[in-house]
Length: 319
Image (cartoon, rainbow, N blue to C red; front, top):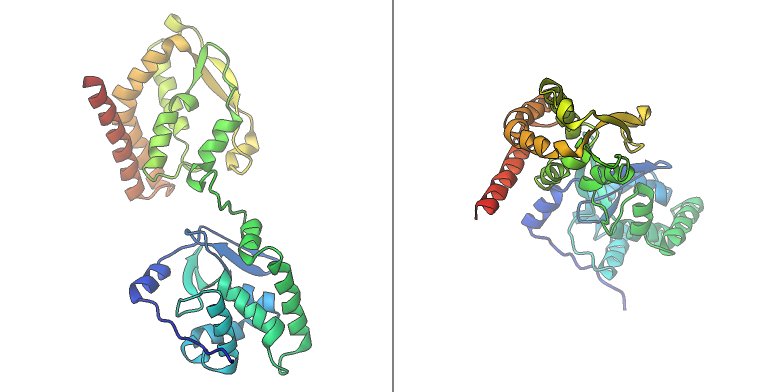
């Protein structure tokens, strides 16, 4: 019995939600545009899908933009049946996305495999044999694993989220500098880790553009010298701090930083509480905003996140 195409509609609210998604990763590998959405779904761009099939991208765009009518024509009916077999229920073949300022079509992996299978096996005599062979070769390649796994591998996406992207920069710096500080001394980077964690939890990107330990280190150094703390606690020592190789600062690795005597740790924490957080921290974020390293809304978010954490800590101590 010949399979019939079932047109499935998707609520407008769901479509709107899809339209608002932005990819977390996108790359072009050998001319094939591909990416991953925040929910982990993988996709090819129109040109990427066309290149996989060996056809002109205008054929893909024409099919997608006119899908409401095309799904009832010979080519569309075959593709719709393949989609139905995969349980694909959206009433559009693509999602409109924006990446790095460019808008384009994102075709989910289910759609891509259906279109690729059509050109490999079901396309008629009017399709050139070279196109069918090209599509068949790629279909077999992807069928051995999956299109989603292929895209994950190509763009460097970790579906298990062992280290979420928002934590990666900080995590990598901690790993690189885990045991660099000499015994008997403390480093600014390790000592303000709780502040950095609070910022990240509050949605603040802590990356190569926002390096709060530099701000803390500069202000603490000024306080250290002005208060002549070396006479009481001993001199500072130098140690090597390294940035991950994808940071621009890594070009001058290792960075020479100061480690301070542990006997001054209490003074440092009191200075952070009484001076840095209420005065220097807002000033640092204002400077980052002016440099366009942070939007004003994120700077406000950072201040609120850190202040909220400090208030919670004080409340816990009093109780």
